[in-house]
Length: 244
Image (cartoon, rainbow, N blue to C red; front, side, top):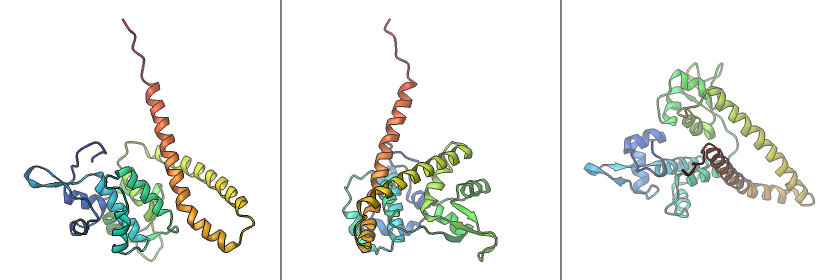
């Protein structure tokens, strides 16, 4: 795994596996200009990083929204050339907010392909506990079927590698849900009061226009607040040095 400050380390095979696509798809997107070229390392081997992975996730999300390849190409062309993996992830979250809540039924094989990695029994238990991929007991898909939330799948898979206990992850999820719902209620109240006298058709149009903007504002403000909290936490742990 790479970070924003590390050199890209993923081969094309590793990138494809992490993104849950084929190598052929990666090369096709690269040829179309949807992915920036890799960093060429020793032995002329291309290396990819987190920005490539985040861009693949964004392309997948745009496809789920029903955008054609040409429309996706135009959409990506509007992004800054040096856009970071973090900003791409935020952009993808905003795009995902446009879509209605959906649940897909898929086999374990398909789930692993979409996850971009093998999933052991413990992994599946954690995904089920997070309500990301739940066994479809009694459904039409058979014993090997799972009900999957596509919007949460990539996040859930990334959380499998976070060195935190499941109880902590679920507690954090509860905190986020509780406070996001509280923020949604307050924002909804403010918007209702602001458009109380308007026509219902106009209200629906305004709501559809505002939703991605509100989500982007929430993501940005939360990101900055979390950065400040972490900075204070780390600073408090540092002891001032005494001059001798």
